[in-house]
Structure formats: structure tokens, C-alpha cells
Amino acid sequence: MRRLLLLVATMTVALILPPATSAQSVPHYVVDASWPKPLPNNWLLGQIGGMAVDKNDHIWVFQRPRSLTDDEKGVTLKPPRSQCCVPAPPVIEFDSVGNVLRSWGGPGAGYEWPTNEHGIFIDADGFVWLTGNGDNDGQILKFTQDGKFVKQIGHEGPSEGSNSKTQMGRPASVYVDTPAHEVYVADGYKNRRVVVFDSVTGEYKRHWGAYGKPPNDDPLPPYDPAAPPLQGFRNPVHCVRVAQDGLVYVCDRAGDRYQVFHKDGTFVKEVFIKRETLGNGSIWDLNFTQDAGQPYLINADGENDEVRVLSRDTGAVLSTFGRSGRQAGDFHWVHATITDSKGNLYTGEVDNAKRIQKFKRV
Image (cartoon, rainbow, N blue to C red; front, side, top):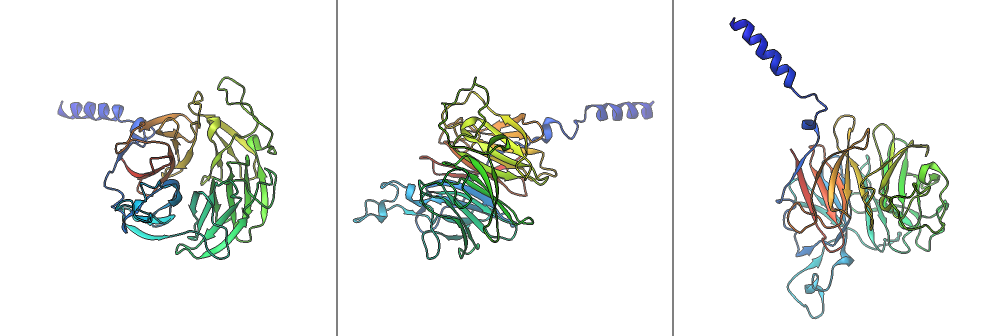
């Protein structure tokens, strides 16, 4: 009888165990208010243009020193207005516990520093790639991790349009496919495309717009959630990410959608998220968790001030966290996200929030 009861109990447990794909495997996050540590040198962060992670799980932040107001940088005024603060350098490297490891950035010889810092990416060889979305920013920059200039692709100046082979139009973000020697650019706040260059030589390779079609710069109607999907991207084309399986994900921020392509620009699918969202839209950033096979996408939504975990397969919303607010774990215009190999998630905010936060996966 005892053997029979044990067998029945074992069968019952087996029946109620959740499958590997159940809700219990979906990432959930809690804020870690201890990260980062207090900044040195009386520094203060400005708006967070972008964030990146390197092979050591160090978090890189590309922030906007010039976005600080006079009351925030009071000690630098002549005469000093207050005892705080000093604008932090544009590029800052943090370790996993929040210590500053390196910092650099700004105008220098041989390159055109962007007038408004935006995107950052660390490629597999350790190079740091930067973009800017200022009015005349049409270039991307490549540096070593110590801030030594390596290469500039494109140049400053008025946009040459979404079919230019030599210049970008206020580019938002970059992703480098190191084995293929290709750099993908979400281009951007002025242009309406993805453009690809050789990451070593800077040579133009290809570009495409929404649905893989040639882009154009014709005036667009106001966004209407009930209207048929627009055949072109809206501004800004805000992110580009390449998955391990080679699919390319592109943020059409104000269009409340992301589109997926093959590397040659062939359209695969599109997914709408919170399609009723007006204003600045719902797809501010996309990133992959580092689970095997990359089954999840992280979607930062700065208009609704929340972060979502999406199924990469279907686009379904699996979990959400955050709300509009000033407390730890709240958001105001959450603009950038990144995940490390331990499952931690990091976010950066723009407008007047000017904040980075860490969330632990639970």
C-alpha cells in the first residue's frame, strides 16, 4: 500500500509541474536601488542617450553633459551658483556593482563629435561605436575602449536624404555584426531607414526602409491607430538589433511597431505594441535577453513609462514592470535598455529624469 501511495504521489507531482515554457520561466525584474554607486568628482549625469554591455558584463553609458541645466551644474558657473555639480564625461564604463571604471569623450582631433549624444554599442572586438541625433549629426564614430579614435563613417551637415550612400540623417543606434564586418545603423531622426556599412573600411553596403522597400522622405500624415499601417517608417527609426539567428529587429518608435528582416533587408514580419499610443510612441528600444536561443525581447516604452518582456517568436506581451514616477523602479521617458549575461537589466532615461537603473531578474 505504501508503495502504491508513493507512486500516486509521484504521478501527481509530475502532473502539476509547469512546463519549461510556462509563465514561471518568463523574466520578471525587481529594482536594485544600490546601483550605481555615487559618482566621483562631483559628477552628475545628463540625459541617457544609450547603453551597452561588453564581454565582461560591464555597462557602458552614453550620456549628454550639455543637457544639464544651470541649477544642476551650478558649481561650474562663474561665479559658482551652488556647490554641485559637474557634468560627467559622455562615455562612462561601470562594473556590475556600480563602480566607475573608465570615462572619456567629447570633441577632438580627426573626428566630428555629435552635438547630441545618442547610441552606443560595444562590438565583439571591444570597439566602442557612437551615434548622435543632433540637427546636423550625419556620422557614426568608432573608438577603442580607452577613447582612442579609430574611424568616422559619414559626416556632419544637412541630411542628404534617406537614399544617401555617404551620410546619415541624425542616426539613432548601431549594431555591429563583427564576423561579417558590417555595422547596421538605425537612421534615424531625420532619415527613415536602416543602412549598413563595412565596419572596417566604412564602405557603403546596402539600405532599406519599412517592409524592405526603398525609403522616401515625403511628408507623412499624423499617426492614426485606426489607419492602415504606413508603408514607410516614421521618425525616429530608433533602434536596430541583430539576433543570434540573423534576424534584424528595427524600432519604428512613433509607429508603435517593430519590423523584422533578414540581413539583406528582406521583410519577415511586423509587430504592433500598444497600438493606441500617441505622442512619442511605444517602441523606444528593443533588446534580447541572453537566454539560450534568445526567446525574449525587452521593450522600453518611454511614452507609457513601462518596460515589457515580449515573446520573440510571437511578439506577445508576457510581463511588464514600471510606471510613470520618480521613485526607484519608476520611469520617466525610459529611453534605453541592455541586459547582461547574469540576467540583470539596465535602463536609462531622458528628458528631465536623467537616470540609470539596474533591475535584477527574479
